Length: 149
Image (cartoon, rainbow, N blue to C red; front, side, top):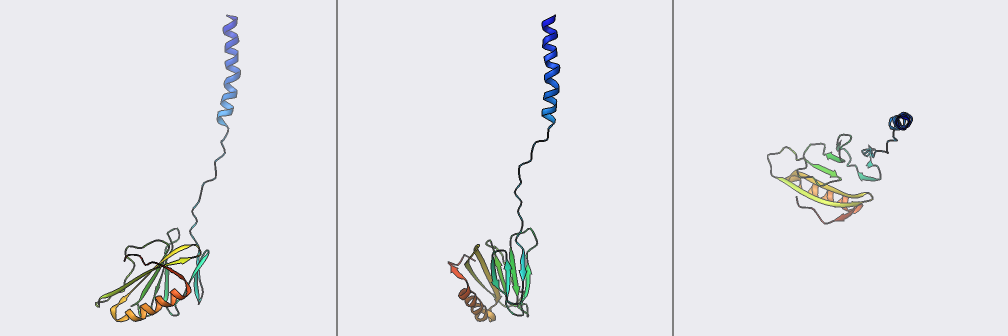
């Protein structure tokens, strides 16, 4: 009987210690957070944390939603030419509404942060202007082979 009392007393001593240890909050390891890059613009350029692209004078700028991969779209004042800059390849960049056939140009540029995919679309009558715009961008950015588009 004494041995049983002795083993029971050990249980009553160890049990509260186990309960206290089990109830202690465990430290939560740091969780990675994906903070979307901040897009800012001025009259000459559009900045995305660590890199920038030229801003076309008079063109409207549209950016992706916060938390989404960066996509910056510049639209000409007449809404006929659209240039899309993206951090990832785009399967269907925006196109202008036109009854005329659409010219589609695509290039990849090497930027400080990695690659930028640039898509230009416009009615065929703007093809030469569109090509000139991309050539001007190529002078400012290092160009890589063009993607399939």
